[in-house]
Every structure is written in structure tokens, then in C-alpha cells.
Image (cartoon, rainbow, N blue to C red):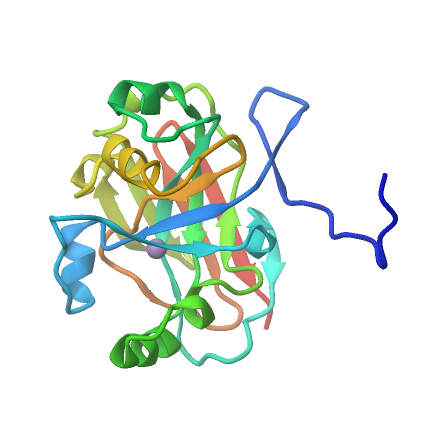
Amino acid sequence: MPEYFFKPEEIAALPVIGSDKLYPVNRIFCVGRNYADHAKEMGAEVDRQRPFFFTKPATAIVHSGAAIDYPPGTENLHYEMELVVALAGPLFEANRNQVKAGIFGFTCGIDLTRRDLQAGLKEKKHPWDLAKAFENSAVVCAINRSVSINDIDDKIIELSQNGRLRQRARLGDMVWRIEELLEFLSRYYHLGAGDLVFTGTPAGVGAVVKGDTLTGSITSVGTIEVSFNT
Ligand code: MN
């Protein structure tokens, strides 16, 4: 063991359904505009030439069931309910079949976004980090290993805010399929075990206020919940 100047942070790790072992998280990739209806509500269009990505640090992870503080620096925090792919890797310059073999499991995620800051950053063509890559901005639950990628299109993804349904779509509505997203990313990164990919959110995003509870689910994958302290 090397000697450090200070104790390193413990790495984020997710529970895995049916196992006592944890899945340690390395990187978090997130795709933007992957449901046409959501792109439209944001006043944007889906780029059908190539998907685009941003990242969050693993330190952004917060576990389902947590109560968190409303983050600083925003007056318009939005929820984005998403399917998350957990990789078993390695995937580099992978083809479709290799991609399928590189998947460890699936889970639910909520990509919390400082929408007001994001709007300003977009306008200036600046990076999105302040809007996306902050503490507690990646809510995730336990990884489910029993779902097949061949069987996800008809599954329903939904999110409710204080019991009121806000987002609901079929996973088959995704513009870029999971195989395509991973194939694309693997041209730019040596993807591997511990990497998570948030696959985009359907329409119906909206603002959170203090005291809110968000609950989400994806058929057969799992349920997720996070609440905001008053
Ligand atoms: Mn998102």
C-alpha cells in the first residue's frame, strides 16, 4: 500500500440483486437527447448522425432511498428518469455482439440536472459540467442481472413526483439503441467493468422543490426513490 497524504474517498459501489457482492463504479457516461419527445420539449432535435455524451464523476452517485439536500447554485433542478447499463467489459472498438456480451446488468437512474445553468451553458456553447456533474446528481439503485438486452423494448419507464405521474415511455422509444450507444462509445474509450451508461430520459422532465419525493420504475428492472430535505 502506498502512503497517501490523506485517506482516499471510498469508491461508489452498487448492490446487485441476488448477490452479497457489490459492483464498484468507475465512470458514468450519459447520453443526451435519446427520446424524440424529450428533445422536442427541450426545443432541440435528435441528431440522427451521432449520439452525444457527457459524464458525471462516480462521486456523484447517491443510492436509491436517500434523502438529499436541494443542491446549491440552482433554482431549477430537474429530474430525468433513465435506464442505466452497467458494463462488465472490456469493450473497445466493439461490434454489436461484443457489446451484448459486455453488459453486466441494468438498473434505474435519475439524472439530476441544474436546468437553469444548463440553459446558460448551452447558450454560450460551454461544457455542461456545472449543470450535470455535481454531488448527488446520479441517483441509482441495485443492479438487476436477470434482464436481457433482447427483451427491453416493451418495458415501461416511468417517474412520479409526490405520487403524480410525470414521465412514462417504452424503452423501445429510445432513438439510439443500447447496442448502438455502446458501439459508438467504444470507439472513443476503452470501456470496462465498472462503467455505467445513462441512456437518456423520455419527455415529462420537470422541476423538483424541497420536500419532494421522486419515485421511478422500469418494468422488470427495478424501482428507485429519492427525496429532498425541506
Ligand atoms: Mn439525462
